[in-house]
Image 1 (cartoon, rainbow, N blue to C red):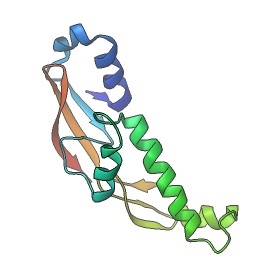
Image 2 (image 1 turned 135 degrees about the horizontal axis):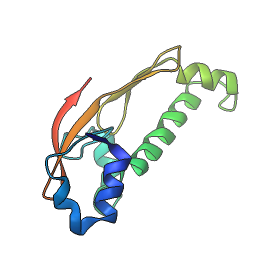
Image 3 (image 1 turned 45 degrees about the horizontal axis):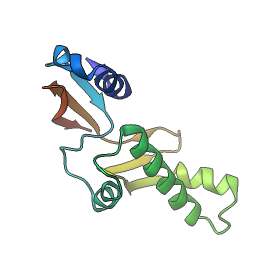
Image 4 (image 1 turned 45 degrees about the vertical axis):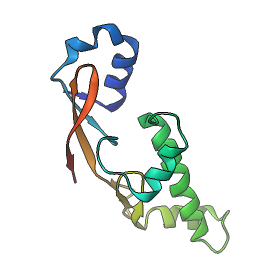
Length: 127
């Protein structure tokens, strides 16, 4: 079992040997074989091919921050932004809803993928 960035890096760097990884399971924050939200469809339409996990996290994080800032009366108020981030419920991300509680911990789905033929294949979405 591997995790998101590790396996994508290995698959990219050692493409000719990727068959050796067949059957390996990997956790990830995204699986583009799973359904996308309307926001996710807009984001992926802007990229040729599918964005990497890192790109998707960057785009989603930016939208998340803008949403928190827009809920403040003064968008530059750091204390308000922090409070809005820590009181986010059901923010529509690329593949599902994201919530962050007062303790700063995020709640979002996790995807399990398997490698077949050198490519990630979606297995299940876990909450």
